[in-house]
Image 1 (tube, rainbow, N blue to C red):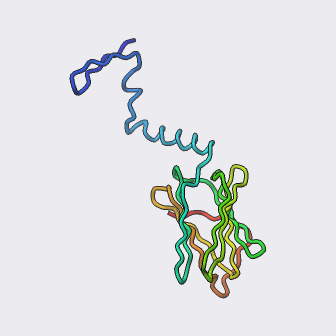
Image 2 (cartoon, helix red, strand yellow; image 1 turned 180 degrees about the horizontal axis):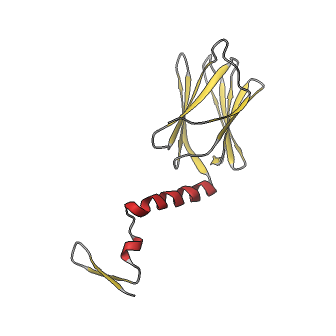
Image 3 (cartoon, rainbow, N blue to C red; image 1 turned 90 degrees about the horizontal axis):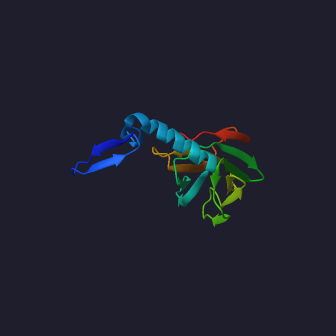
Length: 162
């Protein structure tokens, strides 16, 4: 079957494809987003940039991604370090950064197969929380001194809050 459509400029377009099936509209947008997310999830996400902001009472590590990150984040405490393992997040190189803070001294990004580890080295007992940006393209990792009496969580999965 041949379909004919007149463009806004009055030009006739002839196609063998149904024009309603090739148009991205509200009804098929969610299908497109779902397919894109599944495709991207199969390939993994990439770390685009990171920034470290040192404050007196906290250190914020801001991560940005090439697509909205929806992978799991696992946390492990071991030998004076906290490791956050980002599932399906990739970066092709090791990154090491010294931090001039009483809260933490160094961060490392280490590729681990299809995952990326963020190792936070600190001489102090610290707490770590994560918050996603509203669009999902960014994540804030906040490191603060652990409060007295607060239980230390050895290994756990953390969820990024919106």
